[in-house]
Image (cartoon, rainbow over all chains, first blue to last red; front, side, top):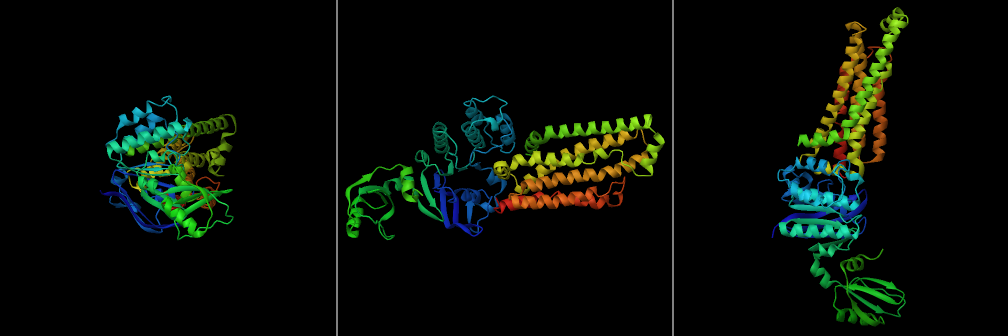
Length: 295
Length: 222
């Protein structure tokens, strides 16, 4: 399967502050990659590099066969871009903005846009600036659907959306992407519902990638175990199976890619007393917090 | 594509451009009503003497009108582009990044020039009712630097607004402000006649300054 996006050894700094070093990833045609990370982890930086708004200190991104530093108009026409917060030309109404964008894209799908707009309860002359965040998200989504791009780049599209609109956005998007074989690169710091959308996951923390694999593999291999302990000073070496742990009084939440027996053996070998050891069910959000920590 | 860009730019600046032109025309009407009043009811000879020998500018109230118009049109056009970093939307359009900004500037410049042409025409043609051609030529030479300043202010406003970092914006405002004062150094009618061409060249140079702001944005200054 060919790659729509190939980013190799991306390194970027803001001043002297390292954002990340040697970040490499690919996005397969027809797949949905979710880049998850806390605020300031480098998600928007990656989006800006992919769109050509930012030149990385080193490394490169090849988008649809072209270097992102100099994308041709033809390739830009194949990339749909949603800015964080569903930013659009809010001084226009839904008709004006459609008229504006339709002049740039020869394969503009007017009906796809107005199908979505018909579901919004907005007046014909209502400016986008006076719409709710949810309504604005639908306008931005409608414009992308009408553009009919090969690659959709969505920067934190869940921001500000209530659960209903978030679900609507995700379901609409997934159905569209899968039926039309579209490729999506999306970032989010709100992990809820992302499980319903993405095929592959990349979790970033400050300066590094913590996980990059198919979502199914991540959810089946990354595990949480809880146990009670009387040990006062819990420390886990980096060479062991423990990826992260959180402690609330005597209860420990331990995160690992290892199986239950392996973790138990490790605790025994370390001489850590434990009882009530139990594997826990995790959502993607639990796994994300387990991997990146609560702070 | 140009039609689409014009459509968007006109939504932003159309109303304010029409309003400012109307205000300018009213101002000119006020100027010539005063001229008529002074010629008919006051001492016409003294009035003539002041204009011809004292180089009095009877339309001095118009002095800063083009500057205000250039500033407001520039702000109306580019502030909505930069709020919430919306300039990314324009730069993502399937068109070369510099080309899209130049087209936006070109449309804004056309609107500013159209407004100025109407105002200039009104001042000149209406003046011919009361004054001879030779005097109106001097009037034209006096008004031109003000119109140039309006155009330069429009370009500098776009340059400042498109600059991504506030620290630099303030630097550009100070430098740009100092540059604009060049157009208002003399209060004598026709004083700028010998340097009209250099002034125009300065305005043309200012016209491409916005490309530097876009270059800085694309370099990652946000």
